[in-house]
Length: 260
Ligand SMILES: [Fe+2]
Ligand SMILES: [Fe+2]
Image (cartoon, rainbow, N blue to C red; front, side, top):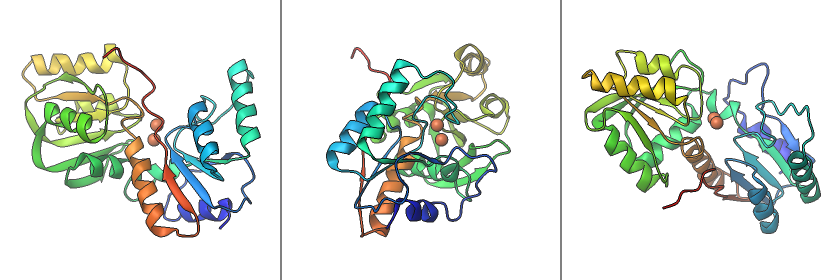
């Protein structure tokens, strides 16, 4: 199978927006596949590791060159050196972002909820890439943060607002989608999960809401921690579906390191 053929199959069932970031970022899409790597980011470390493994293709969720549409106005030293590394590797890099999110069931949210071990119903909200998950069993923000640590490997999930109050209506704003503040303000929502937020605005709102006795909390998972499990689930599905090439997930790790 060629990279371009795999891309076509991956996009079946997706509602691709008119202007999409899901394009081939490097390499020749006509390349035949024997090894396909999957990761959240094509970090320098990931490019080196997948090259060593012998990958023909790398599927990532996020931009390679620090801009959503990869519009590069200034070829900085970092961009030039990274581009040289990628070009030298010959690996086909494909960004699989919009077509993960924009489908009947958001495939990133599906992966996060799957590995968190939560059962319930995922509905769409009016905001792009965010959903409303109604959990079968009530959970607290603290319960969820503990699961995130244990099952998603997030070193430090951060809770703003109510820690112990249980709720079932959870907004899934994985990554950094629009509508986080609006969903937090909604009377219907108990807990908002997201990747990263503006602290002075959104996290402080959650803190005050809880201090005023409202059952409201926000969990900031870190961008990678909030989305990578969608890519993990994709890898498992590809392994089952394709036998003509090997598929392997590569962990890029969280962007921050800690002193503990
Ligand atoms: Fe995303
Ligand atoms: Fe993202």
